[in-house]
Image 1: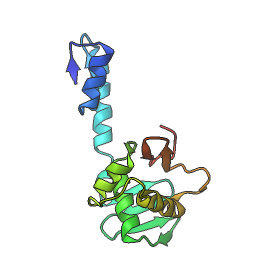
Image 2: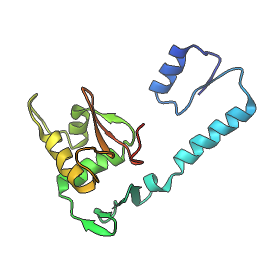
Image 3: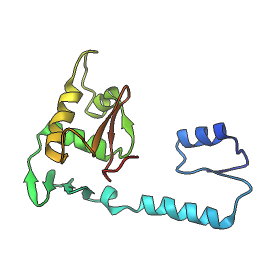
Amino acid sequence: MLSARSEPVDRIVGLEVGADDYLAKPFDHRELLARVRAVLRRAQMPTQAGRLFRFGPCVLDRETRRLIRNGEHLPLSGAEYALLMAFVDHPDKILSRDRLVELLRGYDRSPFDRMVDVRVTRLRRRIEPDLAHPVYIRTVRGEGYLFTPSGQSV
């Protein structure tokens, strides 16, 4: 987004409504080009757009619904696959339990239902190197879960 409005609240609103980036006028043309190139690099990431999605030592083949970690095929239940796809489709974004329920085909749940938590635990057993310190699916206290394909803190 390119705008004459440069107040922090304007930048925040612009990003929250869907802009990939926000640049206020006046700006340096080289900075604009660098930002455009960065957005294009993100848009062309083959690991997220194609058949295969890679994260850490894992490769998810969307077509065959197979998860491979360090060369070993890890069988996924339908529920685990659906949850992993919800995370893969929303990398580096916090997903609340309610949002995950919506993404998992609108399953109705009670306020005390732990369905999402159970599925996350099962999926973590498949992909996390250390269950005590998850790096790919993190719990964000009071908000939900964050899938980080890079395995690094965001």
